[in-house]
Amino acid sequence: MTTTVTINRLATGVPGLDEVLGGGLPEFSFNLIAGPPGCGKTTLAHQIMFTLATPKRPALYFTVLGEPPLKMLRYQQQYGFFDADAVNHSVHFINLSDDAQTGDLDKVLARIVAAVKQYDPALVFVDSFRSVVQASEAGGNGHNSLQYFVQQLGMLMTSWQATTFLLGEYFTEIDANPVFTVADGLIWLRQSVERNSMVRKMEVMKMRGQATLPGLHSYRISSAGIHVFPPAGRSAVAVADVDSDAAATTDPRGQRLRMGVPHLDEMLGGGLPRGYSLLVAGPSGSGKSLLASAFLAEGARNGEAGVLAAFEQRPNRARSPIFNDLVASGRVGLVETRAPDLSIDETVQMLLVEVRRLQATRVVIDSLSGFELALAPTFRTDFRESLLRMVTALTSAGATVLMTSELEDRYTDLRFSPYGTAFLTDAIIVQRYIEVDSRLRRMIAVVKVRASAHSDELREYSIGEDGIRIGEKLVEHEGLLGGRPTRKHDGD
View 1 (tube, rainbow, N blue to C red):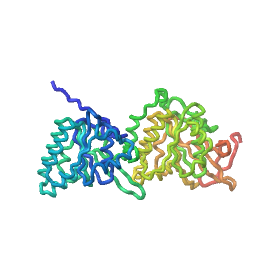
View 2: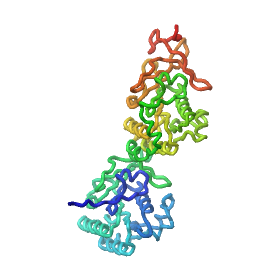
View 3: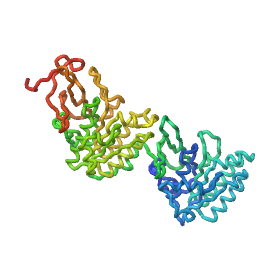
View 4: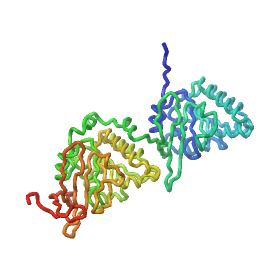
């Protein structure tokens, strides 16, 4: 009979990182945090250290730098996770720069052994391990001594039951280094400048004993520290803990939502099925945002909170007074950012936080056109796939999603989205301009409601002080596409 060893997982205190790691950091593991200068290696290490260190299970932070720890702490204390009271109590800093400069790895190892015996740490950090490597190579010791050093350090930390992190400045994953083989975990940080955007991504290339989320995950460094944004479709499982009543209403075959625009519900076949995603497509000035505001306002009248993600480049005063009142009253949450390095996964996290806070059941994204422009260039290449993950995450959280899409009205063709995203929505409403008697008129139609009967009428609508008013249907004489339709009453 065999007994399976249980490996405890430590909560890192870095938002999103535990999910990427597959549930947390394995206790007593030997890890490498690698990446180019400025990507946040030291910040990530400090954030984990100040989260996990206690006076009974302290942390040792060895600096192998040309600058003293005091200078490093001067900048690290600007972050929200920094705890000045923990320094010299649960967190201890030891400078190994003099020993490392000699290139004598045995001497460096001896200093580490002495400190470990003195403090009995639960966490050990060596920053920057690359400095030890370079000193060893300069001293002519080469990889043989380095490999011995790494193996001895790994065995030492395991025997002392310490979770260990080596930080190193590496620019490529193919650097020949024995530490990559010895390490239990390998976290690689990347960054690149694209136009005016600094794009940062993290990859967990290795983590023994557990399944991690594959691929590159965007992260942000702010005054609070590092925040990692896992894939939207998977992060929804972790944060979509809305109440049971909301979760029970996600069945699209059940309740239908009123849209807040007279006659639009009957065109949809009785309203929009709860849990659906709806695309409202139309040219500039056709009233897409007004329809979205009506959708949120109708929800508020029925006791349902909503969330708006606003990406149009316009001042707050230009928004609908109805919407401004909803936000001011707390019935609608607003997600709005002008960050130049925005990613879809980060946006979904912000939306889900608001959905959970308000227990919101209606979400509006206005508009997809503005959303794409708000993203960093690298995140636009897979916009359609990322958008699908976002819709899936929001609907899985119990929300009904309305998205607006800006279209150029060419009068002679019928399109629903410039991104090829119409297929991923459950319902589509199209708004268009038409020419009638040498005047531009507005037309609305329901193109699709998945698994539901709906109207196939083309109806004229107007926009006034009281919002959108849908009128009579249009009858085609010379052909709607390219012709001049005339208006007739249903009874004519």
